Length: 277
Ligand SMILES: NC(=O)c1ccc[n+]([C@@H]2O[C@H](COP(=O)([O-])OP(=O)(O)OC[C@H]3O[C@@H](n4cnc5c(N)ncnc54)[C@H](OP(=O)(O)O)[C@@H]3O)[C@@H](O)[C@H]2O)c1
Image (cartoon, rainbow, N blue to C red; front, side, top):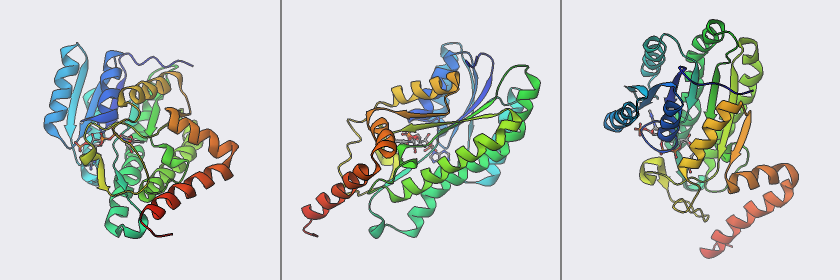
């Protein structure tokens, strides 16, 4: 199946920078009509100007997605603006890099909130509109694209809150894929590995991890955005993006014991560095 996105109304979260921003630009170039959202008004305004500059259609709604009222207003505005909602792309997210033993209850709740509860509640709000989209357009299949992480398929040391939130998100995605089939809504999953961030200090709410993880020379956000758009067009149910993510994804299936050993080894290495073993 190939999904034609021309003229479709698409809500993209996390669009002020990083993966979400790049996804929005690519979708607009394909003729989709965009609603882009994040908290940073100026960055959204720049994005909308860029999209309109090449003849695309975009509107921004500035919200804090952790506020339930903001979420309601956002989805209502998105559906109202183009007379319906055809696709939801959940790309907003944060990460915390650091060990659980030295973390805090607040960090756990912050990460779970933005990475899990926010997209879950957005999906709940968007579902009736997406369902209507399937009824309005003969042969068209509305979709939800969840940008999770390979951390949603494998526990990785120094990323405990992130892995927990993304496992929850992946679990919800798999359940809704089955549940929403009766509404003719496809629920797709994209699993990036480590990605170069536009602003690492804003992406990480904590940056004290002990394992070696090089965000600067990681996978490019541009190619993750390409994969997100490809998944939507080709209706790919699950896509691990990049070498690291692909290797972990296959290893988890084929050699789970080896993968567990590698993860333990990473922890032993940093513990040894600090004279703890
Ligand atoms: N970067 C990586 O290494 C990596 C790896 C695997 C998976 N991922 C996942 O990919 C997705 C995108 O990551 P990224 O690298 O593009 O991150 P990013 O560059 O830090 O962008 C995160 C986006 O989320 C928005 N956001 C955060 N908190 C928000 C809130 N409370 N309300 C509204 N918007 C909020 C930010 O906008 P404002 O700050 O303007 O609100 C921003 O647009 C995330 O779900 C992330 O978990 C990233």
